[in-house]
Length: 93
Image (cartoon, rainbow, N blue to C red):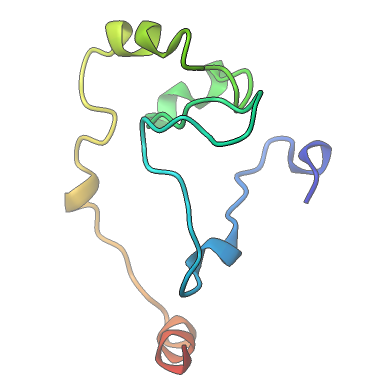
C-alpha cells in the first residue's frame, strides 16, 4: 500500500467506505502538518500532480485562479453499476 508500490495506479481506500469512516471534503485543508488541501481534479490533470501536498493553504488560491471550469462537470450524470457481490456486501453492512 506504500506510495512506491502504487506508481501508475489509483489507490482506492476501501476502509473509507465503512459506517463511521471519515474523509476530507473537497477544498478542505487536511488535519496533519505537511499534508495538502484536498482539491477536485479532472482525469486529464492527473499527470501534472506532483504530490498530495501540491496545494496548501498558502497556495490553493493559485488552483482556484487557474480553473477554467468545474472539475466535477458531468459527475452527477455518470452512470455506474453495482455488481451482485457489491449489493450483497452492502446488504450485510
